[in-house]
Image (cartoon, rainbow, N blue to C red; front, side, top):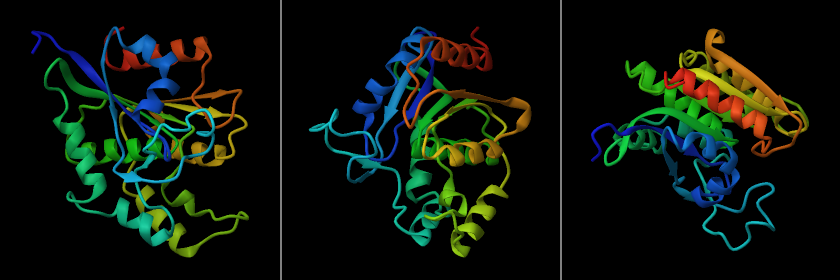
Length: 235
């Protein structure tokens, strides 16, 4: 163990990818962060089909993984409402356990798509327990629990809407946040909704000219890294 280990940042991939794919997708941002942080890419626990845009570029890069079963409102609600022994509770404990070896405490989370809403709930659960180790969260093209109650065609599902409102009512995250939202992302409306899960005093919103992907623009990634460094008092 080093005398002064670097603080850690956790990366949570989107549904239908995996840590190796996410390392490639976040290469621009990680290049800015690696000198200052230990980066941890965690693997979701459930195998699934490849996600949007994964094929054909990442063909043969199995297994493709997801954080939850969102095939129905009831299945997804079980993820958010589970106890400490559930999948979300186990992820929270895994993140709390990081920091050994050459890595310091986890001070930031970066989550793409489904990983963005998972990162949001992780920090809210930590904060609810009085744990403020996470200083900043970066949801990228993120979705929201229960798709915000939305269903295909723009209608409402009463079960989804009820569960979504209950989840939102549990309180906002106090950690600083940087929301990266693709202007042409098919899930943009969900990314905009997730902003409300964070305290307005500490949130930044960066909209970029792109679809459902990590932004590769150097200026944007440099800007995000500076916000992270400042939030973690490294700048």
